[in-house]
Length: 345
Picture 1 (cartoon, rainbow, N blue to C red):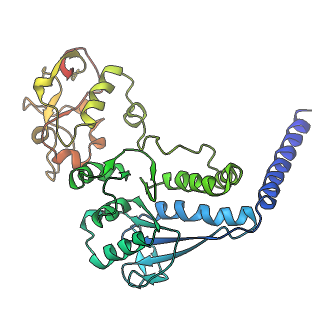
Picture 2: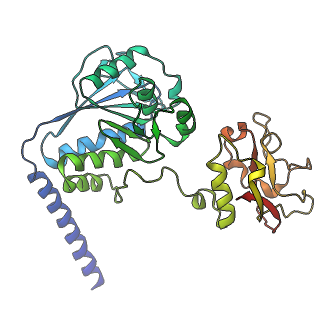
Picture 3: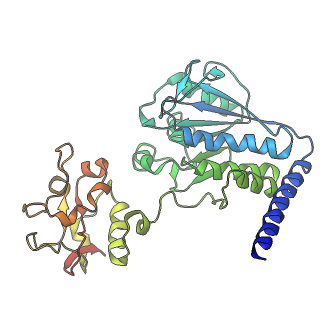
């Protein structure tokens, strides 16, 4: 009986999926086709690009009509290589004029080093024609360098956010998944590009097609643009203590300008529980806890005593960027015991 019920449910779900696809394919009469351009900067992130381009193909397939066309450009009319080594042959270089309703700049790596003036001029020409311009992952950095994001709201990958805020104070930076501000669209990259394109497809052709595109890519939870870019610290670091999470959250928000010790107050937290480690709170400066390039495999306690093995659980999670920053780094131990430690007011 149970097997028959399971078989019936499978057939019902298959019929429902086929019916939904049929409804989508018959619901869209002949419409004006939108043209989307992708400017691929050498070292672009392939996942971000694919997550932006593939939903357009799916929208065409599921609607049964050509809703979108696309072309690819590169700073030079030659194969452009993604960060993983895959090369894509562009349709044109930035010296060629191509018409488009939207153009997305796809960039990765360190977009701050990109300084191709002809490409900036090409983007400005597109903007003067009224083309909607977008940036994906590091792409907003290039739009900003071309002067196309001033007085606009924008986002980009969290890795570039601190330097971007400093370099472009006239841009309203938001740490969200994607932002649509008039004829400027910016996206933080990764799979958030899929969420962005589903939102644009919904805007152009309705929720039914957008939902079908999400289902096509097994993307069962379409995120809003204002969603967070990073996983909650609780899951990212495997920490459950609310007080420690509060401390780490405050520190993460002030990596570029570490909070002064005078702004912290005593609060029960953690210190190393091993018998031979220092008894002071587990604060260590960047110079003592992590030495970039020194080859150390674990932290050293701030009192100068030999590093404690119970600290190594957090060591792999500290990035070289954090190691190079001035100021204190909190290193909690695996075995905990209450002790006064400095925490934010």
